[in-house]
Structures are given as C-alpha cells and as structure tokens.
Amino acid sequence: MSQLPQDPMILLSYVNTQLRDHYASLEEFCASEGADCEEIVKKLRDVDYEYDPETNSFV
Image (cartoon, rainbow, N blue to C red; front, side, top):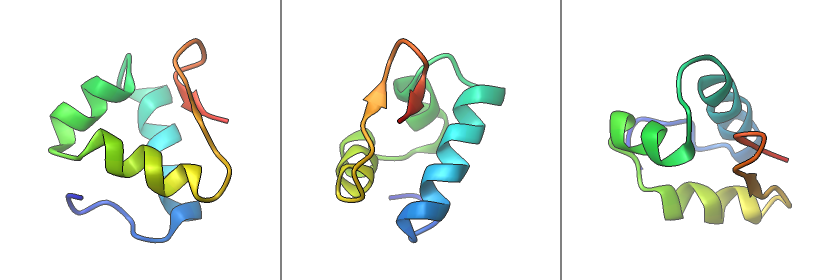
C-alpha cells in the first residue's frame, strides 16, 4: 500500500473522505494514489466494511 494509514479505522475514514470529496470510484482513487485496491478492500473487509459502488464508499 502507498503512504495510506495502516490502522483500518483511520484508513476507512481517510478513504471514504477522499472518495466523497475527490474521486468518482475506488479504482480512480487507487490509480491516483498508487494504492492496491485489493489490499484496501481486504483490509477494510477484515473490519466488516465492504465497498459499495452505488454510494462510492465503504459501508
């Protein structure tokens, strides 16, 4: 993962804020940040959050 927060709950907050304010999709966010989408999804799934493309956020 790039320089994203390592704590899952801080990561959740950071990613959802970035998605809400700057990006149309998780894929766009990952491409811009140089992050691994699968790694983010796995890390947040481990704390019971799933990406919802309709809301463009982890819920």
